[in-house]
Every structure is written in C-alpha cells, then in structure tokens.
Image 1 (tube, protein in one colour):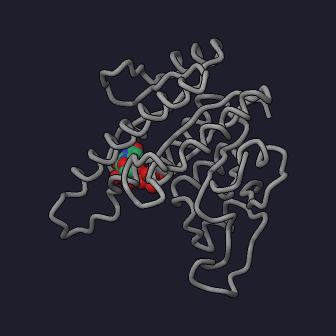
Image 2 (spheres, protein in one colour):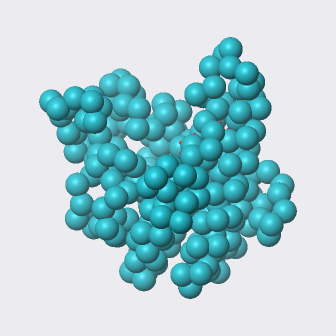
Amino acid sequence: MKRVLIKISGEALTSRSGMDYGADSRIFEICQAIKQVVENGVGISIIVGGGNIIRGAECGENAWIKRETADALGMLATAMNSILLRDLLTSAGLEVTVVSSLRLPFDIESNDVYSVRRLISQHRIIIFACGVGLPYFSTDTMAVVAASLSMSDAILKATKTDGIYDKDPNKYDDAVYIPKLTYQEALQRNIRIMDSQAFALAEQRQLPIHIFSMYEPNCFARSICNDIRQSVVFGR
Ligand code: UDP
C-alpha cells in the first residue's frame, strides 16, 4: 500500500482512568504506531472521532440537547481532538496539517480536493477534522470520503475489539470471529463496527476496511502487512 487512511475513535484520547485528555491516554502509543507507518514509507491521512466528548446519535429524540446541536458539538469535538493529535505528532517529528470541512482558526486549512492533493504532494500527514461538516453523519462516513480524496488504498480502523464478530465478544463468550466479509454481508448482518452509510460508500468506492485492536503495539504497520489479528471488509 502507498497510502492509508487511519480512523481513530475519539475514545483513544481518554486516559486509562477515563479522564478526557488525561496524561496516561493511549494516544502516545498510537502516535508511535503512526510514526512507524511513516518510517515504512507509507503516506498517511487520519480521522479522529469525537466520541470521547459527545456522539449526536446517542442523544435520543427527547434528550435535552437537540440532535443538530449535539452533532455540532461532536464536529467541534473532532476539531479539538485533531488539533491535539497534530501537536503530538508534530512533537514526534512528523509534518502534519489539519484540514476541515468547516472554516476554523488555529491554522486549520480547507479540505477541498486541491488543498488535499497539494498537501499529499508535500508529503504531509493530513488530519481531517469536523467530518463532512453536516449533522446526521459520522466520522466513519467521512473516513470513506477522506480516503477517496486522499487517494488512499485502504481504511485502517483501530477499535476496542480485535476484529469483527457475529455478536459482541465482550458480552458473549461464544461470539464467532469473522476474518473476511463483503460490504453487503456487513450491511445484512448489521455489523455495527461502522455505520451503514460508511459501508455503503466504501463498497461504491471499493475501499477495503481493516478492523483491528488499537491496543496492539504497531497496530497500523502490522495491519498493512496482515501481521495482526484483524477483519477485512472488501469485495463485491
Ligand atoms: N458528527 C457530525 N457530522 C459529521 C461527523 C461527526 O455531526 O460529519 C458528529 C456526530 O454527532 C458524531 C460526533 O460528531 O457522533 C463524533 O463523531 P463520531 O461519533 O464519528 O466519533 P467516534 O465515535 O469515532 O469517536
């Protein structure tokens, strides 16, 4: 692979004790794993979610926060996480630019295709903030858009589980691991590791999605070499 899109859940920025932005967050290991991919000569784009702060879809119809407001807060949360991640990766010696679908200060650029292609030609890591810039969407859907914009060969999604199972392995001992499946199978089996819009768009774009544990050392480089337990969604 020449270039990959890495999707990190916002929860990666939560510390082991559950505190937002706590100093013992797993994000430092994740930054090291990202650096390893760069050292292997693979280009990187990144999307970090905002789920450590708020997820719009989890605010039900009758919640005291309106869905559209919750989504706006969620998008801003992804911008906060993106700025922090840029800082950590820059401190690790990498060249990083945050781009966004919404106009924001803090040296954040536009995510239009021309800006993205220029940043790629400058060999910079690109972090996509604010999702698609609209409510009712997730950063998973934007991961597919961003992977296409940045001409990535695959989406690497680091999660809390080490792949896809037929049911939640944290709740059921008899959950069966599924190493490979098509987008249609993921949709039909209602696999919730990504939302259905993201699976449908990934099928249209024929972008493979790798799902693996963010807790494994060097998870991204190992996912690229298929040297880690993971599930891959691909094919027709
Ligand atoms: N969000 C949105 N539009 C987008 C992307 C994100 O409204 O295009 C909001 C939505 O409320 C979402 C939240 O931002 O729940 C945080 O993103 P996500 O849930 O994808 O984060 P993750 O679960 O990956 O941390």
